[in-house]
Image (tube, rainbow, N blue to C red; front, side, top):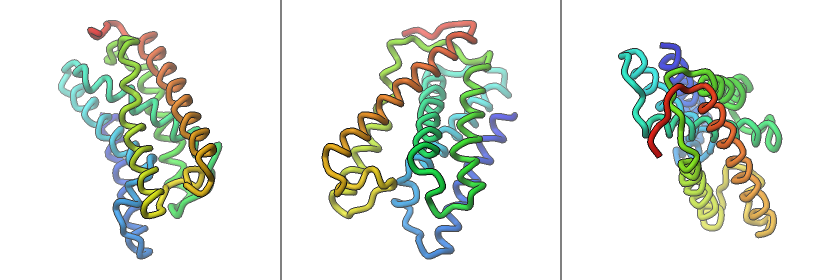
Length: 197
């Protein structure tokens, strides 16, 4: 029940932040939901609600959902580290919204993955699945930056030059790999059964 509640609260927080943007006259959904934080928070919250629903029904979590659960946790680690290290205090959302999305939710999801007894172990060969979603997001952002000039974070601005963009993208992907490795290791340490590779 706690997972369902946390997931629902996070979705409500993101939508509340969007309503504030609408009230401020900035209702473009492609901009607001173009932020990695907002996308990842909603997607991971939906995964958490689904996992919680299976738990309430006393049913095992499906393989695909277990993988999404781990990917969401890894991406939230990146959200927390990048925001708090590179762009702290930016954005138009109230400070408490930023704290919930960039600190509280990532900590709760990682703690859940680390301690969950109903999370089967993921095979290491599935680690690469952590890359498609962030790579797609980065591609869309870079295309938008080169066409309409909009990027969600200043370090991805095209005018900073190709070297800076490559450095930041590679750095973020390296951080993602480290985060995913940690999530996989935590899940394997606590889990009682393995998923087929």
